[in-house]
Amino acid sequence: MKIAELVGDEDSDDKSRTFVFYDEGHTLGNALHFIISNYPEVNFCGYTIPHPAEAKMHLRIQSSGPKALDILQKGLKDLEKLCDFTLMKFDQSMTEYKDNITVEQ
Image 1: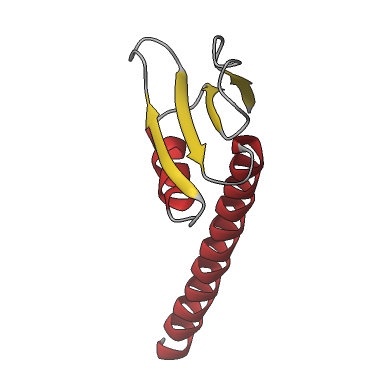
Image 2: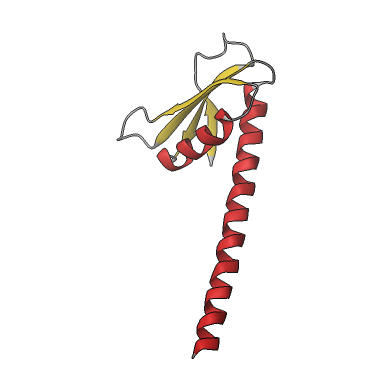
C-alpha cells in the first residue's frame, strides 16, 4: 500500500492532514473512517474518491491532540486487529460447521 500526504497541506499543523492512498477505494476508506471517527481525540475524519478514473482515496484527519499521522497509524493497526479477529471467528465457525456436517452423516 502506497500512502502520501496531500501536496499543499504543509501549512496545516501536524494535527490536520490529508493522506492519499494509491490503489485503494471505498472499502478501505469506509473502514478507516469508521474506526478513526470513534476516537475521542478526533474532531473530523472523512474520505473521498476524487475521481472514479483515478485509483486513489483521500483520507482527512483533524484531531484535538495527537498528530494526524499517529492517529492514522493507530487506525491502521486497529483495522488490522479487527480483520484478524473476524478471520479467526470465521475460521472457528467453519470448523464447527464442518464438524456438525460430519457428525450428522
